[in-house]
Structure formats: C-alpha cells, structure tokens
Image (cartoon, rainbow, N blue to C red):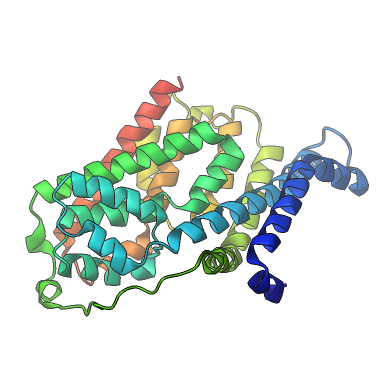
Length: 342
C-alpha cells in the first residue's frame, strides 16, 4: 500500500477518497445492522448505548482521517523557522492576530512549548504575540474541529474556532500590554538559538501528499484510543442518564456552572479526542452549550503538562497571569454562548 501511494500519490488519493465517501454514507446502515445482528431489544438503554458507540466511532475516525490528511498537506508549507520569520517584526495586535491564525495550522504539542517559546523570543517576537500562538495552537487543533463538526455540525465548530481565536488574540494582547517580560527567566534572553540561513528545500506536491498520509498515521495512531474511550463514556451517558438530568447542574439556569466548569477543567488533562464525545453526551442530557464548551476549552487550552513545562522558562507571576487571563476569557465566552443559545 505504501509503495502504491509513493508511486501513484494522486491516483491513490483519489481512489481512497472515493472509498471514504462510500463508507461514510453507509455508516447509519452499518450501525443499524450491527445492532440487529446483536439481537438487542429496541428501545432498551443498552441498545441505544451500543447504537451510539458503533455509529460514532467510525464516523469520528473517518472525519478525523480526512481532515488530518488535508491539514498535513497545509502544514508542509509551514516549518517552525518559516513561522518565526512570518511573525518577526510584527507589533502588538497585528502580531496577535497573525500568531493566532498560524497557531491553527502549525504543528504543536506540549513537548514543543519550550523550543517554540525560546525560538520566538530569541527572534525578537513580542511576548504577547508568542502567547497568542501558544494559546491558539493546542486549543484550536484539527482534532477538536473535526470532532466538533462531526458531533455538533459546522456552526458549532465555526463558533468554537472563532471564539478560540478571539481568546488567543485578546489574551496575548493583554499579556503584551502588561509588560511582563521581567517574569521570563533571565537565561531565556541570553539564549541564542541557531537559525539556518540556507534556503528551504522546495517540496513537490506529491511529497506534500505523502506528508498528509504521514500526518494521518502519526496523529490517528496516537488519539484513536482516546476517541474510543471518550465515545464509550459518552455512549454510557447517552443510554443510561435520564433526559435533562444535567440541566440543574450544568444548565443555563445555574449561573455558577460556567466558572465552576472552568475551575474544574483547568487542572485536568485530556485531549480533544477524549473530552468532546463526553461533551456531546452531556449536552444531550440537558447541559448548556456555553458551560460544556467552557469546560472543554479549559481542559484543552490550559493543559496542565504544558503549564508545568513552561515553568522552566517562566516565573510564577507570568504563569498565573497567563492562566488567569485565558480562564477569564473562557468564562466570558461560556456566558456568551449560554446567552446566545438561551
């Protein structure tokens, strides 16, 4: 299979995309057939939980594969060095906007936090612009957007992306105007990361297609288990938790639900693949959209491992400012969601 992809990348991609369409359109029939073959009684809690699971798992994995492939091709145009060059010399707000947008399409994970931070600061990129990138990259990633699109539709996915970008832009801008550079560890500004002056190697489009397939293998192989676990938990909630059970706890009427959800979410750690299927099930049981999305943003956008890693380059006042500003933005967005969808 790999040899065919390398020898005929465009043709192989077209054939695989056709197979993807056929399989995706047949998912509901396959899910109903699986439930029928299992001999489960109609309307039972277990039946609904199984139906939810066998439909959502392949649906989400198929959507994830398609989008990760497309994003992998896009990412082949953005090396870390090119990203630094694009942000270099940009002043506040214009830089915050560009950094947040680049964060969506640039490879990033918690383990990359320090190298990226060092590279940006050493390149003369303002601190606030750097934080806009660090906030947007994990919060608005392709896994989150694919899952939101697959489970809630394009409007919710677009709204999440828009508000996530707004939080990244505004939070980075506030950090920038507060002039918190003194809370960066002194050795960071003394570090001179090496930069290659060689021209970047030109990549042909078939090689970019290969980069897309590589991205699918790398990302899907890492997150599929979280998707399965998350959907399994969501299936249990879907099948067994009574309708509107969550309304009194996470509903619009509970004014305190948004800040409490954020406070609970900040110290937790999960990725989008694990948390979003649970969010979907909570919504079905009466939780409000603003509350559950605020919870999800806090879990994904304020990753505990990333915060611990950044402690190596930032002093505690700046870390507290970073977490506090982003958390406040998430709370405001949560209330806005609840108001708009009231």
